Length: 431
Image (tube, rainbow, N blue to C red; front, top):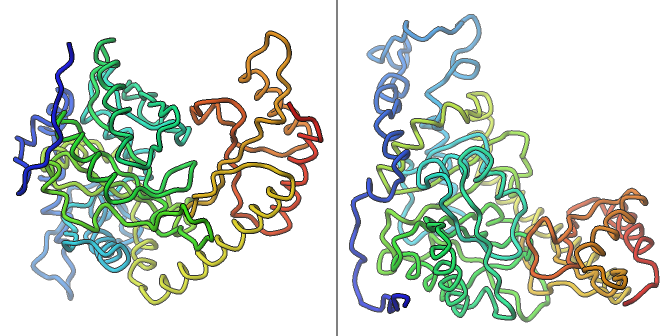
């Protein structure tokens, strides 16, 4: 018989666990080898004859100083320069309106959120442990957590329950219990907020319910807000305004050592080529573990300098995000109109991200005795023959076949031509 655990409804702060206990065995071993505690003193205080004559003179690191040292050497270490972390903290404080100002010392950088997911997998999970995720979900998480760290992505079906409402907790609870009966120990829950591919944000009530769920089970809550500023206006009455997980005090609902925030420059900044991802955590043991392996996921000092330049120019960013959000709203509106003209259903509550979750179920050619997933593959092939690619639902763990993620953040002529080819592939055939 399962344990029935009541929700945390008690006022006040949640009791803080030993941060070392939140790591896996291999995570605790990794944390003991934290090179950041040794090198940060040296790298954060470099000698400069004029600006910092009392700083550390590093004649121990094998690198060439025939060109400016601040951009083309090893810089201040693989966890993000002090300048970059300070700039990102200021960016969060300015644009995401946290209830408590973000401290730069709680931020760590790597060459993308992909790398941070792998590092988290190593640090909080043992091989074979699981991380709860929704269905559908961004397709690359299985590789991010599984390829090297050996973590199992455990996908949760909602079967008609609104996964953005507090009622989703019951589904996650059932999946956690089922997984642990099968020998898969759940160590975390991952949220895309805003969601990829649904393009919808979680209301505060659901975020709180999920925090309390994670706290009851002493599992980590990983909140990926990589589309936090890629929001746009829509006429949909079901759209939920985005509020960052930082926008309210989480400590009455979850042990702060279990809550971690992920972000990157690839989406909001249209700068995927910079390869920079950021994680915020107040868990010192996890920070030690991540700092011990971040040298394998180093973006580089030149990328960090360019990113810091961008982050420090708040006026430019305010203008850039305004234009980006307006354009996303325009392109989303165009895609919706073209889909509606063809009678194509889509997830209308989306108001963030670069995509719509589109149903091509009526156009699946389901043959006698064949399954819908095979029909979805045939539709993918037909679109490929017309040289148009749309991410299929099978790869994103959709609950039923026929759903596709359609990216609308294209030039208008490209979007129109892409949809023309999709419509040509589906033709007039209906189930």
